[in-house]
Length: 120
Ligand SMILES: [Ca+2]
Ligand SMILES: [Ca+2]
Ligand SMILES: [Ca+2]
Image (cartoon, rainbow, N blue to C red):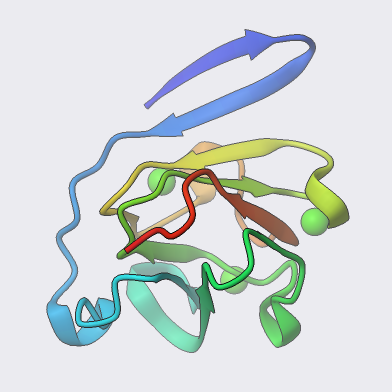
């Protein structure tokens, strides 16, 4: 992980390799990112597909997600606020993060943007 200060926004970048099991990440579906309520891919989950490039519909996981797996081949910018505002976290293609806490991003994501559509 590294932090870059760009234009006053803290960019948090994760380069972890996808390690969750296919069942956990639904790797069969490569057009989505999955969020979990708790660390280590536990608790309630929410799949968000790249059918629409910008998504603002995390539902019950708004401000609750603590881990994620990006099964898509697109980088995804996650934002702490609605409508792509606030602090940004970059989820690399085919990557996962078992705990957002060390990224300063626990229980905060509200919107996201797929960099490449279609993403699968
Ligand atoms: Ca949580
Ligand atoms: Ca992390
Ligand atoms: Ca938030």
